[in-house]
Image 1 (cartoon, rainbow, N blue to C red):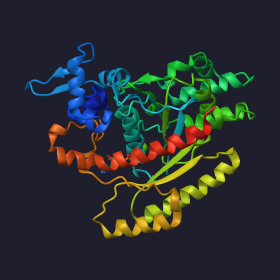
Image 2 (tube, protein in one colour):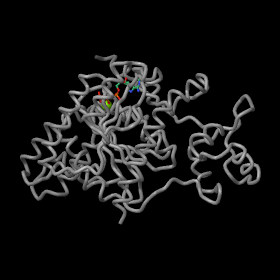
Image 3 (cartoon, helix red, strand yellow):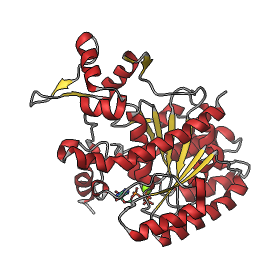
Length: 384
Ligand SMILES: Nc1ncnc2c1ncn2[C@@H]1O[C@H](COP(=O)(O)OP(=O)(O)OP(=O)(O)O)[C@@H](O)[C@H]1O
Ligand SMILES: [Mg+2]
């Protein structure tokens, strides 16, 4: 047992020191700003006060941080328009990523949508509802104080909404400020309310607290917390749920506008997803969850596999328009046990050919474009 911290440090080495890489003009123009590279080069040459990036050691390419790219978005116009993404009024749109099946691709989906949205110029908040804290580590956090996690958010809600005498632990967390639960990540425009393995006891403790105050609507804690944040602090909020419908997940469902259900392309996953949605419908009856949109999304999909194609057809029959049109393809890039969990966007394309990298990210870009469209529809419907 004595060597445990050491082993963990080795496992998390990359995750703990995680830094976001820089982006080349080719990548920025093709995938982020969507303007011709010559246009950007000319604008940079014409205006030396714009961020100029850093020239790589080989002296050929300029590399820009995401913060610099975002400044370019604010300061450059192309065909008379600024390069900022569309942002309707009102609070951020919240999407829960959930399913029963462990290892079905929930965290990968939440992580990739968060990264895509940040590359698109949005300010993102991710909330890690899973005490295994995989997303928290993937976002570069380690050694998070258990009180400053999602668990803390729920305890603070109990403290604020109950007149009963609360245990000391709840009182001390209750004294924290709303922003104390929000942490920076290795991405400048992605924040996180993290999870911590130390809060694995949360489910039992929550059941105990509910007995202390039976009137406490525990499932609305996260919704209340997010409602109280300044509405313009974030644009897109993503919830990474545990592989269960537990008390924490009920908080995610209650607060969410949109539900994304990632699922694998095999028949057993088809059945377990149907079971998940049936159980959720039952739970939703109890807590009155009403999603503005539901999307079932195939993950780890191989279009060359006849069985995957047959299962896709079954999903299409079963879910119709609720099946996301673009499955996430299986890619070797993500088939890695590393705690740093580099996304396809974090991977530097110089580690492979540009074609290989473009192929790996293609399905993630298509899935994100569809997600963004869904978010935008809900946002415009919600606009005050
Ligand atoms: N498109 C993909 N191609 C290859 N591997 C993938 C893909 N999506 C996910 N994986 C891998 O599958 C494994 C499980 O994925 P992930 O952690 O996202 O699932 P999960 O549903 O969040 O799991 P859990 O229920 O344990 O939280 C990970 O090792 C991940 O890297
Ligand atoms: Mg997960």
